[in-house]
Structures are given as C-alpha cells and as structure tokens.
Length: 413
Image (cartoon, rainbow, N blue to C red; front, side, top):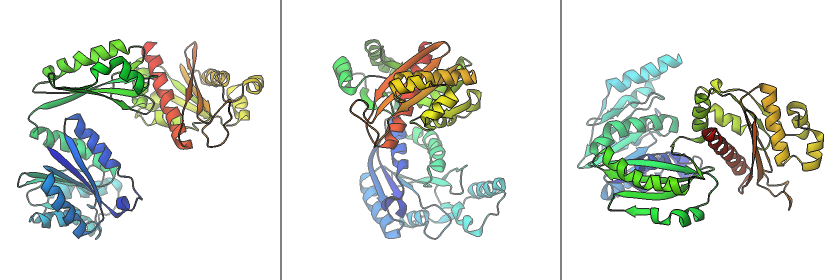
C-alpha cells in the first residue's frame, strides 16, 4: 500500500508552521509496516488541492489530507475534495452533536459558521474529534482510501490513533510488530562493528533490523511481519536477544516510551521522589518531568540556580569548589545534586551544569561541555557529556541525556 500525505495550508507552504503531522503519521504507519511514499504541502487554494489530488490519485492507494477543515471561508479542503470525487456534503448528526457538546463544555456559544464543519462527504465515515470542532472523515473511491484530518497536532494525533485502530488495521493482510532496544553511551559506528551481522533485512524470518538516533540515545528497532503475533515475536526475539547480549553494557531498556515517561514509571515503582537543580538547562529538565500526567506524585519542587551566587545561596555549593573547579565541573554538579537532595529530602536529585554557547567556551572547557550529577539515595554519580549544536539544541540534548542516565541508574538500582 502506497500512502501520500498532503498538508493543506498557506502557513505550512510559507514556512510559518513546521509540518510535524507528516513525521508523526509516517512514524505511526511505519509501526504497522505501512509505507508513506510521498509528502506534499500545498496552499489553501482549490486549484492546488485539485492538482495535488490528480497526482496523488495516480500514484497512491491512500491519500490523507491535513488542514483546512475549520469554520472560515479559507478552510475549503473538505468542500474541494467532495466536489473532486463527485460526493455531496451532508449533515452528520453525530459530528454536529459533538461540536455542540464541545462548545457547551467550554461555556461558549456555537456560531453558525461551525455548522459547516459537521457536513461530511455522503459516503464518508466519521473520525471523531474530541479536542476541537473539526471532525475528520474517511471514504473509499474507486479503490483509493481518502481521509481528512484537521491541522492542529493536538487534535490530529488522537484522531489518527482512532483511524488506525478502526479503519487501517482492517485493511491489512499481514501483521507488523516493532520492538526496540535502547542504548546509551554508544555510537552508530561501534554498533556497526559489534552487531553488523544482525543489521539489515532478513527475508527468511521476515524481519528488518536498523539503528536510529534518538534524543540522547541510540535505538535498535526490530520490525517483524507475519500472520500471528506469536510468529512475529519469535522471529523478532531471535535478533533482539542476541543484540541485548552483545551490547548489554549499553542497554537501558526496550521501551518505546519517551525518557520522562520511563523515569516516571521507574520512580513510581520504587515510591521515590525527585528534585532537580539546573543551571544550563534552565528548567527544561523539570519541565520534561512535569510533562507526564501524575508528576506531582514524584516531584514537589525544583531549582534553577543559574548564577554562582544562586548555587551558593540555594544549594549550598561552596565558594571554594567554585573557585577551584569552576561552575562547569564534576565537583559542582555533585554539590548541586547533593544540596538539592538535602534541601528537599527527595530520594533522587539530578543536576545539570555546562556551557550551552554560543559564547563562553574556552579551549579547556568548550561550548557543549556538560556535567550531570545524580544523587540516588546515598549514592552520587556524575556524567560528562560533550555536545554540539545551537544553544537550544545543547540544552535540549543535555536534558535528554540527564533523563536517560537517570533511567539507567534506576533500572540497575
């Protein structure tokens, strides 16, 4: 099955909005062995939509359009698509009721312009939108599946999950499952040396094995195809077990969860609390932890101590340590973590200090030099990381590495 994704919106074409929907949907399709072959972005113009459909219809089995389902005149995707395929737009009572309920919950008045959002192509099935007023839909036309989604990711993502489970999986002749081995502290070149014979496409077992760079880690993804879950997992585990055995020093798990979710689960299992003491990351680390629903169960307070004076006053870092080793040092990272742990009584404290750039670097301490301190009960560990990129990228990567290192310590605790 060949799939084409079409983003409709001037803001995407003109560069004001990054098309994250395409990367999200492509990665979700890939989990089930489905191949997205084409990404297209077009303006909010009827002729552009028609031209894109002409091209897509000739080369794809499934066409997904995102954007242009709003209540205003320039939101014309649904109207143009319906006309293109010769379908009448009719009122979907279920969609209309959901839109009215959405406004009721917000305690706002539904406008007449929202009525048009409940009109769907005559043969289409509803894809509910519980986070906005633009329902999606899906229909078949002469062997091609066409689906429409709103543009905002917060609306599209849960709708896309519904679409996969209720429509796409029913189209598949074979199953596809993906397992992941996550590694920390190892580069792709080393991986190629250690497990080169386990990487690639193995037709006899219908398995594909490939490394991917994640944020602060490397992932080995093992994708298998078959007619039953047992068959696929047997073939996947043949490779997974060998990879884990050879690279066990670097393995931090086989989870597909993002780092903060993994840390949250590990802390919750042990009934541990955590605090953060940040310098170069400036609150990013605490923010990532608080991304997880239920974060109040594990984190009560956090500190951003950017200046030396703040490190001394708040965390108890000594002037002697700062003068002797500098703020960007293993010693300061340790004292920051221990100080935060003592101050809060948390089971775990994690600190970050480094040079995010683009200025401030020296030959001895270049931009991208980072130290991460982790106090875990009565144990203290420190990790040195050398990163590169923009200031924002270095701060974001520091946060990711801190969470990955913490996850590995917690897994082995």
